[in-house]
Amino acid sequence: MALATIVAVTAGDILNDYGPPALRVVAILIATKVAVGLVMRFADRVPEQYQRQAKYLVPKVIWALGLIILMGAVGIDINSLIALFGVVGLAAALVFTPVGQAAIAGFLAGIDDVVQVDDVINVLDQPGKVIRKGTLSLGVELLDGSVVYVPNTKAVDDELINYSRSGASRIEVEIKLDGDPNLGDAIALMRETLDGLDWQLEDRPAEIYFAEIGGDAFHYRCCVWIANRLDGEQYESDMLQALVDRLRGEGFSVGETGSFFWEEFPDTHRSRPISIPAPKSA
Image (tube, rainbow, N blue to C red; front, top):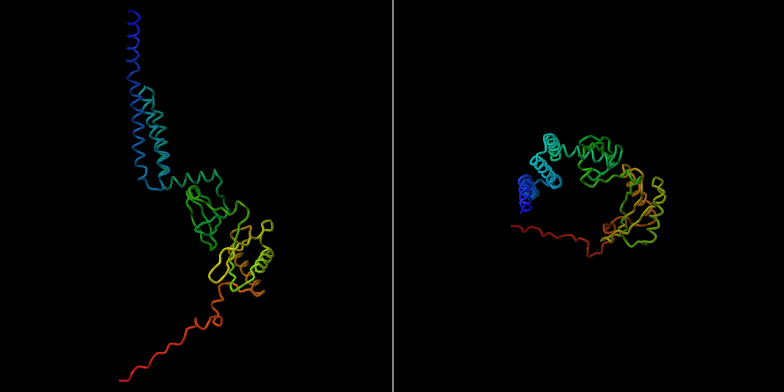
């Protein structure tokens, strides 16, 4: 009897001392989980450029806030934690602004060594040289002398083509052989011409690909490797000129030109004069 009384008193003391705090802890955890679920339902309504950050950051912020409330509920001094949470909240707010995103992206791009000054990258579907790395953007000089300012978020969130890291860039031109050419001889001439270009990289052989059978010609892609992508436009012109001169010099017809020569058209395809009757006199 005495033992039962002691157990009952002890259980009562434990419930009085720890029951309410335990219930508060459970209630706060449940409320925090519900809050995260409710917020995530609205994440898809956030502008698309912020959705990924919102889905990653917002649940963590809510759980951190819930943890602070829980610690206060069990008697822990949370004044310093509230100050820290305010700083974290300010940083989180910056993440959802274009300026904050660009600044963070610039920091991450620097850590990951994505791009450096003097690198040649692809901007607006053309090569350009990085002349400036800022906190918010990259300054890229294009071939026409204009400068494009690219937000740092492009270097982190999107695919970035950097021509400088591999030490070589491939350029290509298209050759169309019309008529009825000997393709084997034409390929041999093209390969010999490409191998004779003194500005191409010797350690990377030229490439020739049979690309397409067109309506009036056989299409070939001829590729060589160069050291600097900024020279690509001039070298493409030089390569195309060399190939055309060599092929035409050996009697090959280059381009889809055969159908344009009048004497090669059959009589049935030639336009005939139209007879217009004279007006009747009144």
